[in-house]
Image 1 (cartoon, rainbow, N blue to C red):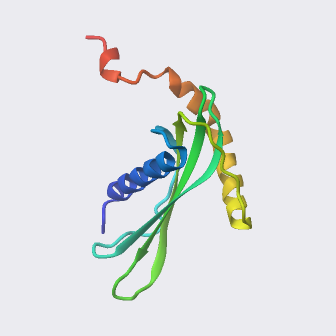
Image 2: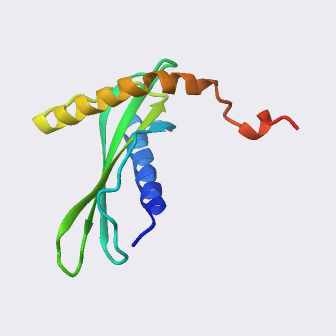
Length: 141
């Protein structure tokens, strides 16, 4: 089985690229919603990762707060079955302001779910701005 940390690393890299492509600016990572691995990923399986910007709102510091959902699926090459392995939701701040609105019923359900997660994380994300960007410089010797 593949270590879950590798799957998380791949999913956050894809989410970062998705947020950067949608906003045309460099995103700043804020948080990851609680996630569960539904299925293990066997070595030799084909991993499919799909990233989607599901919700945006104006960020308190300007720009946009962006929620990116990454769906992961694995295909067993021997049985050709495709299984859902997990869904990961990441929140970023971007310098550019933009808006994403749903067009289909499925997109609207994802939008509402992401909006609820954003509201639940709002207070935590706003207090994170007090953390210095360079933690090494803030360490007292």
